[in-house]
Image 1 (spheres, rainbow, N blue to C red):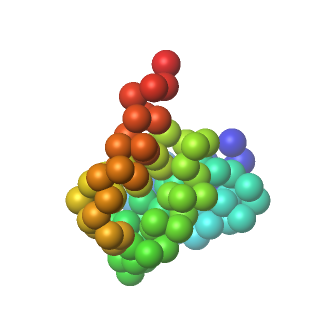
Image 2 (cartoon, helix red, strand yellow; image 1 turned 90 degrees about the horizontal axis):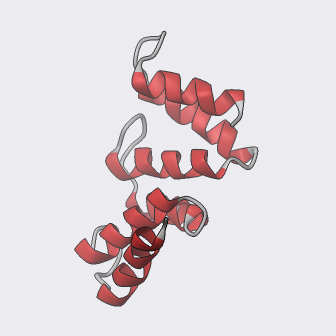
Length: 106
């Protein structure tokens, strides 16, 4: 994990610094741009929930899609989005596909 990722996490959780989602987003973006796929997933979460940025489900979906298959939390989030029709057209087949990846992890 990069130092940028850890700085993002510290700001997100308020560990040693005041909790600041805007700073978390900044550092997750930097880390994601450097190829950290976990940071990409965490950035997607901020866009999905509007933490530190304006809520943008399209951006969240795009970022989760980049991390899917590599970060199990991304598949869980995509499965939920498809299941609920949250930011995407409801699609039970795609929801099942993503959620099966989650339960197959050992």
